[in-house]
Amino acid sequence: MLDKRHIFISFLMLSVLLVQSQEIKINGGFIEDSLQLGSTVHYWVTAEYPMEIEVLFADSNYNFSPFEYADKFFVETELRNDNAFDSVVYGLQSFEIDLIQKLQLPVFVVQSNDSIILTTPLDSLFFEELVPLQQVSDTTQLIQNTQYNPVDRLYNYPLMWIILGILLAISLIIFFTFGQKIRNYFTIRRLKKEYGLFSNFISQLINLLKESVDQERAAQGLTHWKNYLERLELQPFSKLTTKEILALEFTSELKEALQNIDKNVYGNQKDPELYKSFQEVEDFTQHRFHMKIEDIKNGK
Image 1 (tube, rainbow, N blue to C red):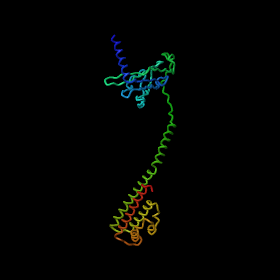
Image 2: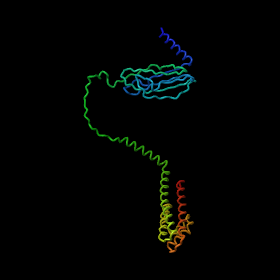
Image 3: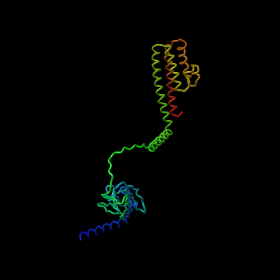
Image 4: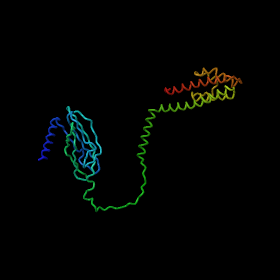
């Protein structure tokens, strides 16, 4: 008598909930008709309910027996005629060999103190036998062979070509997107290195000329400067005379300095302030170096 009373009370509570909640619609079932051992099948569940109610689906901790949980896919809540509509698809696997395997899943209606469990309709799948069970028995004859047979390893050429193709595509994308910036970076890096070497040389030369005027050192300094400026400006400075250099548009400020250096190198004069002429050459070269760097950065 007590069990019947509990059943009646539970049924009454569920009926009251459904009436108050303006009807909660639960549905679900398998997408596939059959399954194979260990393969993944999919079970869908939908719930349509009033917005003021909170509904939860089963998660990975639920016992999906005779199936095992693999994954799930949720769809965001939709609004349909002032009702909320939720859906989820579970990926399930079975390692049972029952010919018919059934499942129904719960939907939890959350209340303040407790929750009501609604279930989807019971649905079933047919088990596909890869080998008829009648043919599998303890008397099955098996050939036992535990001897190791070496097998030649095959090189995965398709995978290699796929990887090379992906790397080539990435390289082309990087080249066409950042190619000019990469070239500019390495060009600027090279120019800075060359200027650093020239700057060290000309600074040492100036210090030596301050101590004593040396015709041979001055000649070496002039040649070194022409060679460096040739690489910087991409013009044949090493083959130009002072007159030809001064004929260029951007070298007019060097007139006095170069003429004074020529007098000391070719005219056997010893100007104790010759180092000042090389300082002017150094200042000019430093200015041309910075202009070259700016031109490269601005894409000129």
